[in-house]
Length: 115
Length: 109
Image (cartoon, rainbow over the protein chains, first blue to last red):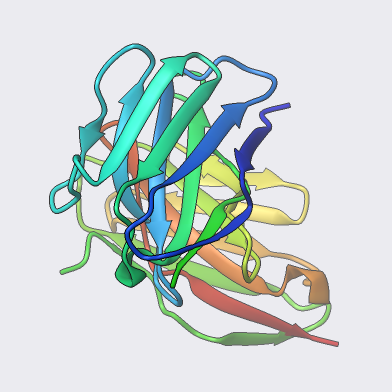
């Protein structure tokens, strides 16, 4: 149980374009989903927390107009990187939780490369 | 002071030995602690969670928590080459997790 999927696993895009990443909980309802970013040899940095049906809460320093998060259902959250630039190239990982007091289960990650 | 600190390693142990991974945290009010394993290029995988002082065992893994010392550790018994990975310590902060930078473990045959 507790399987989380992400799509796509890898994406290459040109500077200035937008990219959408999907995160799905496959066998449980995720009231809360989290989006992390990980640069090479660094730890995971939380970008935002989203609750189903509510606006996402962004961490300090994360531009909410650049990283659009939608959590429209209990099994799906999306992250859209708008007007991507090379410095946005990173490993984006989502996690999902059945509730705030439960463990988080991570998706396999999406490697974004902006050329 | 970083909120969650780990020695980056690498920690090298021979196959069959016990690997000991350590983590300290700064928020004395923290209540939930987790160990994740991350292979290169992959996302983290939950190994253990621990919420109260003492030891918690699951197979070859034992998590130890000492809230007075603000210290969490993970012991891996009978280490295998397949255990070679980066181990991330995470402390719950509000609704999210605060991660350490991870300790790289290398188990040599």
